[in-house]
Length: 71
Image 1 (cartoon, one colour):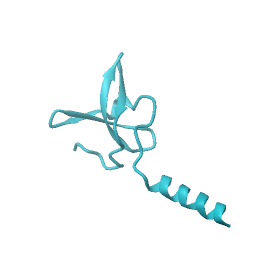
Image 2 (image 1 turned 60 degrees about the vertical axis):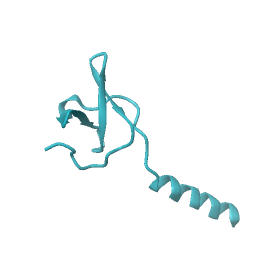
Image 3 (image 1 turned 135 degrees about the vertical axis):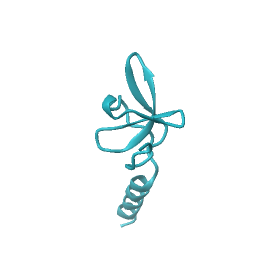
Image 4 (image 1 turned 30 degrees about the vertical axis):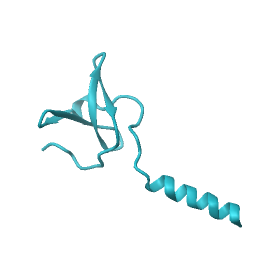
């Protein structure tokens, strides 16, 4: 019983913890800039700050959620 409770608690904590950037590049067609900061969206709809390396945009830092940061 204690093992099941501990496992359940771990899963809940992981689900609601802020996540780091997903590996890989973001969609180039979603790149936008606001106040000098560049953002782009991953395939599942969440946004990140991005940097360009070798012709591709890569996410950096934590997810910013699903609301577009620049309109």
